[in-house]
Length: 241
Image 1 (tube, helix red, strand yellow):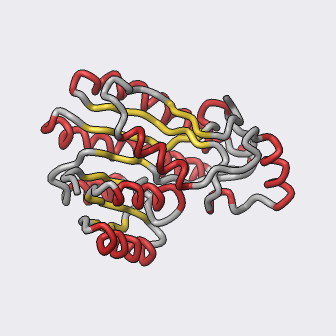
Image 2 (cartoon, rainbow, N blue to C red):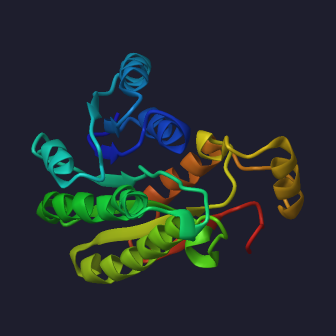
C-alpha cells in the first residue's frame, strides 16, 4: 500500500465507482463524493476498506455548490490526485431549456472543476507534485444536437484543462482530461433500444465502452510521466478518431 491519496467526485456509480475500485487496488487512500446515492457510496467505501486495507472516506456533497466543495477540502490535509468526475446531462432543445437548467449544468459540470482545483492546488504545491484528471466527453470537441449545454460545459472543461496545465507545469502538477465516447453508464439509460443500436453502428469498435476501461485509462493517466500535461485523451472505440 502506498501513502498517496485521491479525491474522486461522483463516485457512487459508473465511471467514478470504477475509478475508486481501480485506485483502491493500487493501495491509494480514497475520499469519495456523491450527491444522491450516499448509502451506495458508504457501502462501496466499506467494501474497499475491507478488501484492500486502505482508508476510504465517503462524503455527501453537491460539487456544483462552492460551500460544499470548501467543506470537503476543510477535511483534507494532503492530496496527490484529483479526479473531477461529477457530472449531469440534459437532453432537449436549447429553445426549451430554462435558465435554471442551464445554470445547473454549468455548475455541476464546469464550476465544480474551478472549485475543486482552486482548493486542491495549495495542497499539491506543498509537495511540488500532483495530478488533476478531468472527466470530459467527445461532445466537448464535437458538440451534440439536443445536448448544447452539456457540450458547452465539456468544451469549457477541455479549455480549462489546457490552460491550467500551462499554469501549473512549473510546479510539477499535471492537468489532463479523459474525453469519453459512449460509455455504458446510467447517464445513457435514457436511450431507447433503437437509439442504442443506431449509435453502436457508428462506433468502429461495435460496442459502447465500459466504466472499467475508462477507470483503467484514468489510472494510467495518474501514472503518466510528468512531461504529459495539458492533454485531452479520448477513449471512444474509434468513434471520433
